[in-house]
Amino acid sequence: MTTPAQQHAQRNRNTIYVESGELLRVDEFPGDQFIMRIRAPKCAATALPGSFAHVTCDDTLPMRRPLSIMRAEDDCIEILYKIVGNGLRWLSC
Image (tube, rainbow, N blue to C red; front, side, top):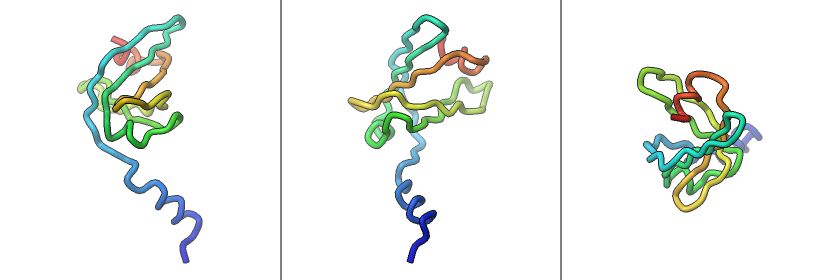
């Protein structure tokens, strides 16, 4: 018999990927808000709005940013974010 925690863990199997996505575009909106579109087929195939993607900003800043996926379609994910620090500012360039 499996515990509820084990059942939850099983649902998460095969949903974590290390994938080098291709940045297609970054659109800017008022209030330092941006939508980033990334071609990431593995991620897009299983992502749901509210899932997280860990995005690397720059090689000189190794800490990844966990950002919520707004939309997943056509082998791409879209992430909406607001600049709140240097790492996210680098993403917007």
